[in-house]
Amino acid sequence: MIDFSEMWGDPATDLSAAWILLPAGAASRFFDAYEHADEATIARTRGWAVVRALNLIWIGQRGRLGLPGGKPTWEPADYATLERVLAAN
Image 1 (cartoon, rainbow, N blue to C red):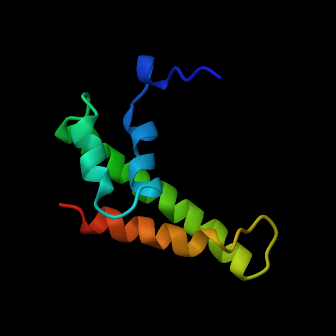
Image 2: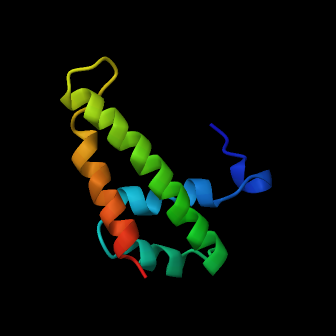
Image 3: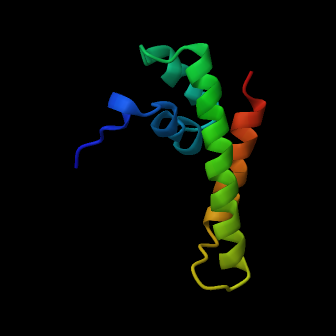
């Protein structure tokens, strides 16, 4: 698989995974180590992480309610994502 997003897209879409996948406090260390993450890019990563977390919470709620396509384990994990994003300075 070839990911061309950084060639013509916004790298913030991919970098938002730092908020979703890493534990609390690790995203800032990740961005410090990533050479191309200026403040504007980091702000966009936060926005993308919130959008993705809200979508995944919706999928988790569908699972908790027993609706098709739902994944109940996603809901708590993505509430944790929102907490990490909102707690970051």
